[in-house]
Image (cartoon, rainbow, N blue to C red; front, side, top):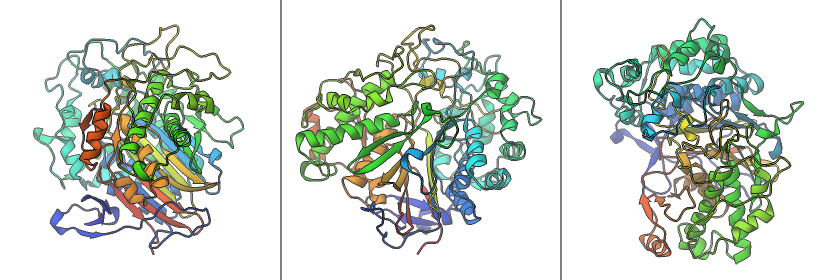
Length: 635
């Protein structure tokens, strides 16, 4: 097996060209093509580089599947769809057809504002009610009961993108996933470790509430009650049959209870199971909810573009940043960049030099302060734009950015941040959240990025939320169901008649930190990336963006460097921090009032950089997951 040597640290990511299981002692090392961002659209990139397309994912087998689709003449959308279905097989604990997410599509030569958005986020069933999670049960019990399951959007989102922007058939792009599920594959160390999760050991005694349905996943991933070892051959024939039905009949196979595959009917039945201690936790999804599921799509070429789902567009130090719209947190990624740019102009410092070089006290101080300010706003203002008029323009208005920047003094930690009052849009604001609702978002998400030879780019973040989602595998169909709905406010901030931004409503999507992102120089795309990681997602993306633009790092170095993250503006919000920062710097920050919790990883960024002037392409997969990079025409 071939590993790509990391440029800093001691970690490495698996090159997907040689992804078979092997012992570490047998590993060889080499460096994959790597580069900094171009400084002009016409610049020629350094060699070696890829020229025929690059796929970066959290799992090498998925990267190889995407690469093979490109090699067959498919475009970036074809490859991305193949990757998503493959991840349903090889990374079932984090992603899959029982979940949802966001896709950004950049068609070659399109302008930043012409970026296509496919919002395939899960939604609450029609019978969901505002107070359904307002109980004394623990978050673990709520998140592993049937009512946590949202109507999944991944299948519809992937097939829509394939039909509208791809070039290949369903059968062709699903073929790698069907083969891996039916013939089996050697599981990764990460999947092997996750088969020991407590989420696969729930409800071991069948009763009228759990219906014995929690045993379905155990039978696949913990046969005989034992975890699977690294390298074990895992066959999933029921999942293969499900994927074959989707390949044959498309979205109808998944969303229609009348389809002969029985997939939709099995989804509805499975989510009626609940934890034995939570008799009110039965799922509320019906066949009608599946049949009525609708994507949120923005395509500027449509006769009536849906501007509720238009990408969020900002700028930072000469680059255009394009990211996903609400209920994604992309607006707060752009807000943090706007705040940093304003602070640098106002206080006369430059990130990347002096006390504001990477890992220095000044840099980590201002990064934490803008995170705190943004998450305070996020807790109050973010929701589903089809139900609540999220004030995106107001949150990014120069006057509002100045108001928020005035709260920050470099070299100091503000005691707390409350949500601000951005200028309202033309629609009268419905009641926002009060910002006090406890934040809950699963970290077991996935991200992948694809570029093809022509320069088409796809950036996708998808998830089933927590590790193994709800813990419920669809009966007889082989895939896990999400537990997205507890991302709504447990404690309602409004009323049934006047719900707040992130209160539960039927048909509504909960907010999320998912934020696939594109970077342009002028009108030319030069980078694309995203990350899993729960509330740490936008903070990981922020830091990779600063590493590329301000710290002038190569792509792989930008991805590998250590990170920190916090997700609230309150005085008691601790900062998660990875190893690798100076103990002296950390001590100085603690004297300012920051408290740190050590963590092994924040996010797992999968990224590409491209030089449009010469056609050079580069990829980096974050070793915080295993990571896979696979490309064509390397020289």
